[in-house]
Image (cartoon, rainbow, N blue to C red; front, side):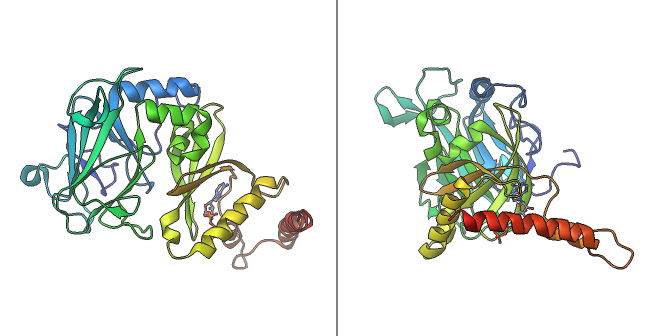
Length: 324
Ligand SMILES: Nc1ncnc2c1ncn2[C@@H]1O[C@H](COP(=O)(O)OP(=O)(O)OP(=O)(O)O)[C@@H](O)[C@H]1O
Protein backbone atom coordinates (compact mmCIF):
# COMPACT_ATOMS: atom_id res chain seq x y z
CA UNK A 1 0.00 0.00 0.00
CA UNK A 2 1.42 3.40 -0.87
CA UNK A 3 2.35 5.47 2.17
CA UNK A 4 0.32 8.40 0.92
CA UNK A 5 -2.89 6.44 1.38
CA UNK A 6 -4.80 7.59 4.48
CA UNK A 7 -4.54 5.26 7.45
CA UNK A 8 -8.24 5.57 8.09
CA UNK A 9 -9.02 3.13 5.32
CA UNK A 10 -6.98 0.31 3.88
CA UNK A 11 -7.77 -1.89 0.97
CA UNK A 12 -6.29 -5.20 0.16
CA UNK A 13 -4.38 -5.00 -3.10
CA UNK A 14 -5.59 -8.32 -4.40
CA UNK A 15 -9.14 -6.91 -4.48
CA UNK A 16 -10.56 -5.15 -7.41
CA UNK A 17 -11.82 -2.05 -5.59
CA UNK A 18 -10.60 1.12 -6.88
CA UNK A 19 -10.23 3.44 -3.93
CA UNK A 20 -9.89 6.95 -5.23
CA UNK A 21 -8.53 9.95 -3.39
CA UNK A 22 -11.30 12.48 -3.16
CA UNK A 23 -9.00 15.07 -4.61
CA UNK A 24 -8.60 13.01 -7.78
CA UNK A 25 -11.30 13.00 -10.43
CA UNK A 26 -13.20 9.74 -10.55
CA UNK A 27 -14.44 10.44 -14.03
CA UNK A 28 -11.78 10.27 -16.68
CA UNK A 29 -12.02 13.79 -18.06
CA UNK A 30 -13.61 15.85 -15.35
CA UNK A 31 -13.00 19.36 -16.55
CA UNK A 32 -13.79 18.88 -20.21
CA UNK A 33 -16.35 16.13 -20.19
CA UNK A 34 -19.99 16.90 -20.71
CA UNK A 35 -22.43 15.76 -18.09
CA UNK A 36 -23.69 12.90 -20.28
CA UNK A 37 -20.18 11.60 -20.88
CA UNK A 38 -19.42 11.65 -17.19
CA UNK A 39 -22.09 8.95 -16.74
CA UNK A 40 -20.57 6.43 -19.08
CA UNK A 41 -17.46 5.31 -17.31
CA UNK A 42 -18.91 4.65 -13.83
CA UNK A 43 -21.86 2.68 -15.22
CA UNK A 44 -19.67 0.49 -17.31
CA UNK A 45 -17.13 -0.16 -14.58
CA UNK A 46 -18.98 -0.04 -11.27
CA UNK A 47 -22.32 -1.09 -9.84
CA UNK A 48 -22.17 1.26 -6.85
CA UNK A 49 -20.34 4.37 -5.78
CA UNK A 50 -20.19 5.67 -2.21
CA UNK A 51 -19.03 9.24 -1.65
CA UNK A 52 -17.54 9.79 1.83
CA UNK A 53 -18.69 12.72 3.92
CA UNK A 54 -15.16 13.00 5.36
CA UNK A 55 -12.67 14.41 2.90
CA UNK A 56 -9.77 12.22 4.08
CA UNK A 57 -11.68 9.04 3.32
CA UNK A 58 -11.72 7.56 -0.14
CA UNK A 59 -14.56 7.14 -2.58
CA UNK A 60 -15.72 3.51 -2.62
CA UNK A 61 -16.35 2.27 -6.12
CA UNK A 62 -17.44 -1.35 -6.49
CA UNK A 63 -16.64 -2.99 -9.82
CA UNK A 64 -18.84 -5.45 -11.69
CA UNK A 65 -16.45 -8.37 -11.22
CA UNK A 66 -17.28 -8.46 -7.50
CA UNK A 67 -20.85 -9.23 -6.41
CA UNK A 68 -20.48 -8.10 -2.80
CA UNK A 69 -18.06 -6.45 -0.42
CA UNK A 70 -17.69 -6.81 3.31
CA UNK A 71 -16.63 -3.90 5.52
CA UNK A 72 -15.20 -4.13 9.02
CA UNK A 73 -12.32 -3.46 11.39
CA UNK A 74 -10.84 -6.96 11.47
CA UNK A 75 -7.87 -7.98 9.33
CA UNK A 76 -8.65 -9.59 6.03
CA UNK A 77 -7.12 -12.98 6.84
CA UNK A 78 -9.30 -13.49 9.91
CA UNK A 79 -12.42 -11.55 9.05
CA UNK A 80 -12.53 -11.73 5.25
CA UNK A 81 -13.16 -7.99 5.06
CA UNK A 82 -12.70 -6.38 1.67
CA UNK A 83 -12.57 -2.87 3.08
CA UNK A 84 -10.85 -2.43 6.43
CA UNK A 85 -11.98 0.51 8.56
CA UNK A 86 -9.82 0.85 11.69
CA UNK A 87 -12.15 3.14 13.67
CA UNK A 88 -13.05 1.79 17.12
CA UNK A 89 -16.79 2.16 16.58
CA UNK A 90 -16.62 -0.29 13.67
CA UNK A 91 -17.09 -3.99 14.49
CA UNK A 92 -14.61 -6.61 13.30
CA UNK A 93 -17.20 -7.71 10.77
CA UNK A 94 -19.58 -4.81 10.33
CA UNK A 95 -21.70 -4.85 7.19
CA UNK A 96 -21.98 -6.09 3.65
CA UNK A 97 -22.98 -4.43 0.40
CA UNK A 98 -24.43 -6.76 -2.21
CA UNK A 99 -25.40 -6.38 -5.83
CA UNK A 100 -28.76 -7.67 -7.03
CA UNK A 101 -30.59 -7.10 -10.29
CA UNK A 102 -34.32 -6.43 -10.49
CA UNK A 103 -36.35 -9.20 -11.98
CA UNK A 104 -38.59 -8.62 -15.01
CA UNK A 105 -41.45 -7.41 -12.78
CA UNK A 106 -39.38 -4.96 -10.81
CA UNK A 107 -38.19 -5.22 -7.23
CA UNK A 108 -38.72 -8.33 -5.16
CA UNK A 109 -37.24 -10.99 -7.35
CA UNK A 110 -33.69 -9.95 -6.94
CA UNK A 111 -30.94 -12.43 -7.69
CA UNK A 112 -27.25 -11.76 -7.60
CA UNK A 113 -25.93 -11.37 -11.07
CA UNK A 114 -22.48 -10.30 -12.06
CA UNK A 115 -22.86 -8.39 -15.25
CA UNK A 116 -22.21 -4.93 -16.57
CA UNK A 117 -25.11 -2.53 -16.58
CA UNK A 118 -26.02 -1.25 -20.03
CA UNK A 119 -28.28 1.62 -21.09
CA UNK A 120 -31.94 0.56 -20.94
CA UNK A 121 -31.33 -2.48 -18.75
CA UNK A 122 -32.93 -3.09 -15.37
CA UNK A 123 -31.72 -1.02 -12.46
CA UNK A 124 -28.95 -2.60 -10.36
CA UNK A 125 -30.22 -3.17 -6.84
CA UNK A 126 -27.74 -2.39 -4.11
CA UNK A 127 -28.41 -4.00 -0.74
CA UNK A 128 -26.92 -3.09 2.62
CA UNK A 129 -26.84 -5.75 5.31
CA UNK A 130 -25.76 -5.24 8.91
CA UNK A 131 -23.70 -8.21 10.09
CA UNK A 132 -24.75 -7.96 13.76
CA UNK A 133 -22.39 -5.06 14.38
CA UNK A 134 -22.27 -3.72 17.95
CA UNK A 135 -22.84 -0.06 17.10
CA UNK A 136 -25.06 -0.52 14.09
CA UNK A 137 -25.33 0.44 10.44
CA UNK A 138 -27.67 3.30 9.57
CA UNK A 139 -29.48 4.52 6.45
CA UNK A 140 -30.51 8.18 6.76
CA UNK A 141 -30.26 7.89 10.54
CA UNK A 142 -32.39 4.71 10.86
CA UNK A 143 -30.66 1.57 12.09
CA UNK A 144 -30.67 -1.32 9.65
CA UNK A 145 -31.94 -4.39 11.49
CA UNK A 146 -31.06 -6.92 8.82
CA UNK A 147 -30.96 -5.94 5.15
CA UNK A 148 -32.22 -2.94 3.17
CA UNK A 149 -32.09 -1.79 -0.41
CA UNK A 150 -30.34 1.52 -0.99
CA UNK A 151 -31.79 4.45 -2.93
CA UNK A 152 -29.76 7.01 -4.81
CA UNK A 153 -28.70 9.75 -2.37
CA UNK A 154 -29.08 7.67 0.81
CA UNK A 155 -26.71 8.42 3.66
CA UNK A 156 -25.02 5.29 5.00
CA UNK A 157 -23.36 5.61 8.45
CA UNK A 158 -21.36 2.92 10.16
CA UNK A 159 -21.13 2.76 13.96
CA UNK A 160 -23.10 5.92 14.70
CA UNK A 161 -25.42 8.34 12.96
CA UNK A 162 -25.45 11.40 15.20
CA UNK A 163 -23.52 14.62 14.80
CA UNK A 164 -20.64 14.41 12.37
CA UNK A 165 -17.28 14.01 14.08
CA UNK A 166 -13.68 13.25 13.11
CA UNK A 167 -14.15 9.48 13.33
CA UNK A 168 -17.21 9.40 11.13
CA UNK A 169 -17.59 6.56 8.66
CA UNK A 170 -20.35 7.93 6.51
CA UNK A 171 -21.05 7.80 2.80
CA UNK A 172 -23.63 9.04 0.33
CA UNK A 173 -24.77 6.28 -2.01
CA UNK A 174 -24.76 7.15 -5.68
CA UNK A 175 -26.66 4.82 -7.98
CA UNK A 176 -25.04 4.13 -11.33
CA UNK A 177 -28.24 2.91 -12.97
CA UNK A 178 -31.00 4.73 -14.79
CA UNK A 179 -32.55 6.12 -11.59
CA UNK A 180 -29.36 7.95 -10.79
CA UNK A 181 -29.03 9.14 -14.36
CA UNK A 182 -32.63 10.42 -14.48
CA UNK A 183 -32.15 12.30 -11.26
CA UNK A 184 -29.12 13.97 -12.69
CA UNK A 185 -30.69 14.87 -16.02
CA UNK A 186 -34.40 15.33 -15.56
CA UNK A 187 -36.44 18.14 -14.14
CA UNK A 188 -36.56 16.50 -10.71
CA UNK A 189 -32.83 16.84 -10.16
CA UNK A 190 -33.17 19.59 -7.60
CA UNK A 191 -35.34 17.34 -5.48
CA UNK A 192 -32.63 14.75 -4.92
CA UNK A 193 -29.34 15.49 -3.27
CA UNK A 194 -27.69 12.46 -4.92
CA UNK A 195 -28.03 14.41 -8.17
CA UNK A 196 -25.52 16.95 -6.95
CA UNK A 197 -22.83 14.28 -7.38
CA UNK A 198 -23.87 13.81 -10.99
CA UNK A 199 -23.37 17.45 -11.81
CA UNK A 200 -20.44 18.30 -9.55
CA UNK A 201 -17.12 16.58 -9.02
CA UNK A 202 -16.53 16.88 -5.28
CA UNK A 203 -12.96 17.66 -4.18
CA UNK A 204 -11.30 18.56 -0.86
CA UNK A 205 -12.98 19.78 2.29
CA UNK A 206 -12.86 23.56 2.63
CA UNK A 207 -14.18 23.81 6.15
CA UNK A 208 -16.86 22.95 8.61
CA UNK A 209 -19.44 25.18 10.26
CA UNK A 210 -21.95 24.57 13.01
CA UNK A 211 -24.40 22.69 10.80
CA UNK A 212 -22.62 21.84 7.61
CA UNK A 213 -19.51 20.65 5.90
CA UNK A 214 -18.24 22.58 2.90
CA UNK A 215 -16.33 20.99 0.03
CA UNK A 216 -14.65 22.36 -3.04
CA UNK A 217 -16.19 21.04 -6.28
CA UNK A 218 -16.00 21.38 -10.03
CA UNK A 219 -19.06 21.81 -12.22
CA UNK A 220 -18.49 19.03 -14.78
CA UNK A 221 -20.50 20.93 -17.41
CA UNK A 222 -18.58 24.18 -17.27
CA UNK A 223 -15.37 23.42 -15.37
CA UNK A 224 -16.16 26.23 -12.88
CA UNK A 225 -15.08 25.86 -9.27
CA UNK A 226 -17.84 25.77 -6.67
CA UNK A 227 -18.25 25.29 -2.93
CA UNK A 228 -20.82 22.70 -1.89
CA UNK A 229 -22.33 22.99 1.54
CA UNK A 230 -24.11 19.89 2.74
CA UNK A 231 -26.51 19.82 5.65
CA UNK A 232 -27.86 16.53 6.96
CA UNK A 233 -31.36 17.25 8.22
CA UNK A 234 -31.60 14.61 10.91
CA UNK A 235 -28.95 16.53 12.82
CA UNK A 236 -31.69 19.06 13.43
CA UNK A 237 -33.92 16.36 14.91
CA UNK A 238 -35.97 17.90 17.70
CA UNK A 239 -34.86 21.37 16.68
CA UNK A 240 -37.35 22.44 14.04
CA UNK A 241 -36.78 26.10 14.85
CA UNK A 242 -33.11 25.96 13.79
CA UNK A 243 -34.02 24.11 10.58
CA UNK A 244 -36.68 26.74 9.83
CA UNK A 245 -34.15 29.54 10.44
CA UNK A 246 -31.72 27.80 8.14
CA UNK A 247 -34.35 27.44 5.43
CA UNK A 248 -35.20 31.13 5.80
CA UNK A 249 -31.51 31.99 5.39
CA UNK A 250 -31.51 29.99 2.14
CA UNK A 251 -34.60 31.80 0.83
CA UNK A 252 -32.94 35.15 1.56
CA UNK A 253 -29.59 34.10 0.05
CA UNK A 254 -31.26 33.07 -3.23
CA UNK A 255 -32.28 36.67 -3.87
CA UNK A 256 -29.02 38.43 -2.96
CA UNK A 257 -26.67 39.70 -5.62
CA UNK A 258 -23.78 41.79 -4.39
CA UNK A 259 -20.03 41.87 -5.04
CA UNK A 260 -19.24 41.16 -1.40
CA UNK A 261 -21.79 38.41 -0.81
CA UNK A 262 -21.10 34.82 -1.78
CA UNK A 263 -23.76 33.84 -4.33
CA UNK A 264 -26.03 30.86 -3.90
CA UNK A 265 -26.07 29.29 -7.37
CA UNK A 266 -27.94 26.05 -7.01
CA UNK A 267 -29.99 24.25 -4.40
CA UNK A 268 -30.81 20.58 -3.88
CA UNK A 269 -33.08 19.09 -1.24
CA UNK A 270 -34.55 15.72 -0.40
CA UNK A 271 -36.13 14.43 2.83
CA UNK A 272 -32.71 13.80 4.35
CA UNK A 273 -30.38 16.48 3.01
CA UNK A 274 -29.94 20.03 1.86
CA UNK A 275 -27.10 20.85 -0.51
CA UNK A 276 -26.17 24.40 -1.39
CA UNK A 277 -23.98 25.10 -4.39
CA UNK A 278 -22.13 28.34 -3.76
CA UNK A 279 -19.76 30.54 -5.66
CA UNK A 280 -16.24 29.41 -4.72
CA UNK A 281 -14.39 32.08 -2.76
CA UNK A 282 -10.64 31.64 -2.74
CA UNK A 283 -8.58 32.72 0.25
CA UNK A 284 -10.02 30.66 3.12
CA UNK A 285 -11.60 31.80 6.33
CA UNK A 286 -11.60 35.56 7.08
CA UNK A 287 -10.69 35.07 10.75
CA UNK A 288 -7.71 32.87 9.80
CA UNK A 289 -6.73 35.46 7.21
CA UNK A 290 -6.71 38.20 9.86
CA UNK A 291 -4.97 36.12 12.54
CA UNK A 292 -2.28 34.83 10.19
CA UNK A 293 -1.42 38.18 8.64
CA UNK A 294 2.38 38.47 8.86
CA UNK A 295 3.14 41.39 11.12
CA UNK A 296 6.29 42.12 13.11
CA UNK A 297 4.26 43.59 15.94
CA UNK A 298 2.48 40.31 16.65
CA UNK A 299 -0.34 39.86 14.17
CA UNK A 300 -3.29 41.84 12.91
CA UNK A 301 -4.07 43.57 9.65
CA UNK A 302 -2.59 46.94 8.69
CA UNK A 303 -5.14 49.66 9.40
CA UNK A 304 -5.77 50.50 5.75
CA UNK A 305 -6.45 46.91 4.82
CA UNK A 306 -8.73 46.46 7.83
CA UNK A 307 -10.68 49.55 6.76
CA UNK A 308 -11.01 48.19 3.24
CA UNK A 309 -12.40 44.87 4.48
CA UNK A 310 -14.72 46.58 6.97
CA UNK A 311 -16.10 48.78 4.20
CA UNK A 312 -16.85 45.67 2.11
CA UNK A 313 -18.64 44.01 5.05
CA UNK A 314 -20.65 47.16 5.76
CA UNK A 315 -21.60 47.50 2.10
CA UNK A 316 -22.84 43.88 2.05
CA UNK A 317 -24.82 44.42 5.26
CA UNK A 318 -26.35 47.66 4.04
CA UNK A 319 -27.44 45.98 0.80
CA UNK A 320 -28.95 42.99 2.65
CA UNK A 321 -30.84 45.11 5.16
CA UNK A 322 -32.17 47.44 2.48
CA UNK A 323 -33.35 44.47 0.36
CA UNK A 324 -36.00 43.45 2.91
N1 LIG B 1 -18.29 29.68 -0.83
C1 LIG B 1 -17.20 29.25 -0.20
N2 LIG B 1 -16.00 29.23 -0.83
C2 LIG B 1 -14.89 28.80 -0.20
N3 LIG B 1 -14.86 28.35 1.08
C3 LIG B 1 -16.04 28.33 1.77
C4 LIG B 1 -17.25 28.77 1.17
N4 LIG B 1 -18.25 28.65 2.08
C5 LIG B 1 -17.68 28.16 3.19
N5 LIG B 1 -16.35 27.95 3.02
C6 LIG B 1 -15.40 27.42 4.01
O1 LIG B 1 -16.08 26.49 4.85
C7 LIG B 1 -16.07 26.92 6.20
C8 LIG B 1 -17.39 26.55 6.86
O2 LIG B 1 -18.41 27.32 6.27
P1 LIG B 1 -19.87 27.42 6.87
O3 LIG B 1 -20.60 28.42 6.06
O4 LIG B 1 -20.46 26.05 7.02
O5 LIG B 1 -19.68 27.88 8.36
P2 LIG B 1 -19.37 29.26 9.00
O6 LIG B 1 -20.22 30.30 8.36
O7 LIG B 1 -17.89 29.45 9.02
O8 LIG B 1 -19.84 28.98 10.49
P3 LIG B 1 -21.32 28.81 11.08
O9 LIG B 1 -21.98 27.67 10.40
O10 LIG B 1 -21.03 28.51 12.49
O11 LIG B 1 -22.00 30.11 10.84
C9 LIG B 1 -15.79 28.41 6.15
O12 LIG B 1 -15.13 28.84 7.30
C10 LIG B 1 -14.90 28.54 4.91
O13 LIG B 1 -13.54 28.26 5.25
